[in-house]
Length: 196
Image (tube, rainbow, N blue to C red; front, side, top):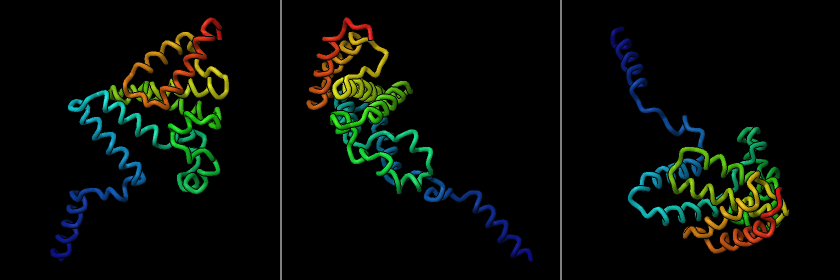
């Protein structure tokens, strides 16, 4: 009888001290976990690497990556979302960079990119990540101007033109995005006296 009691006590002690099974406890998909680990590793290397190169690499990765999730679609359960995402967001096959520079990208998607970038830039994050978020924020504003002739910010045309000029001076801006920002800046300069 003491043998059985000792075994139960040992089993209870082992379950309290055993490491938690991370496979069962996590809700992240493998790709999401890899992304989180990659971001954490990059953040840890920020002090030892060139900040310009790090920002450029982070921007390339972000532009080549997927669009931010649609807040309305995330209300659905993840299993339903996995099965229906292509129907809910037909442009999901585009990368973020392609969506920003494709004139067929709908305005709702552009607003979603802008809002996601603004939210990320407002958080306490490494300088490189903040630079990327600000770049994406203004790239989305540029897309709305170029594709829909809409100013999707409360900033004046003059303020947007100044911000775009500052971004164009940054060495991490890829050529395709630089061209996009430059064209939008010209529109802002033409309209800088407008009060909209």
